[in-house]
Length: 351
Image (cartoon, rainbow, N blue to C red):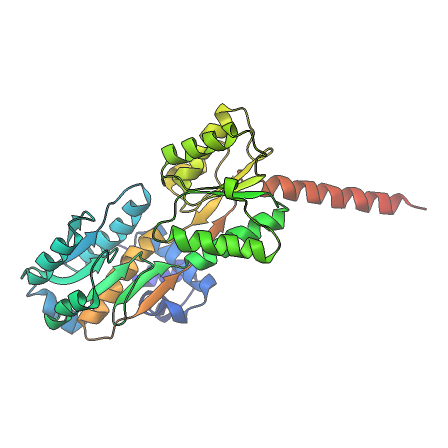
């Protein structure tokens, strides 16, 4: 089994830096943090708590409730795996309670149960500050995981969707695209992602027309149907589309392929989440690598820190741009290099 020393050696940092990245990620530079998390994933390293007070509390209650709304798609598998494995390494069990309509009931059953020492929530739904105060009265810590909505006094970990929206907008404009569309309905996370994406484009003089902003279900069928509607409209098509997650992007690319439209030569596509199948798409899908496993790991870490008496903390993790073929960047770069080389040759040939 890998140790923290193994992680430090692979990431070429000190053991104390690894510990800092796990417990206080906001204090570690993004480049260093990425190396550490990549090393942890490669070695399948999951940190365990050495906090005496946290371990004493788990002797009385040995389960953590993961309360979620509706779960769909491969994205959440990695988040849940991060939670489950980190809890297991800390001698705790995960009990998953799902369903948006039953979220309030699941929450109150959890804080009344003698089995649970903590709660991880993926959404608040209709829970209020008064509801959350009930858990505090019973000394049960709560951490929000992968939710834009939080409350004062509530620990949380999420990805920085504002940075993701800005990163994708700047990437598409860097390639030179000006006719840009967006596919996907606004939901938790994707709402902020889409708003900042559109705002960043507008700040540079690029506006998304209403007919190129299509709110579809966040799955491959939704992406396929939305792209079919766009193609059938008879209106001019965007040169590039940002799909709010990879599943929508894969469905959209399937519709383009069926219509004989080449990606990225005729329409560039970029997604978000980097689900496993994305790299095997035709062409391979450009996307944002999300720290899914790390988010689950961090949620448990924050929960354990609260159990040991630390105050609630809020952590934002960054996504990373993964450039593949579908966005057209590689083709654009090859063209730029060829043009620069031709220009240099012409310059050298001049007398």
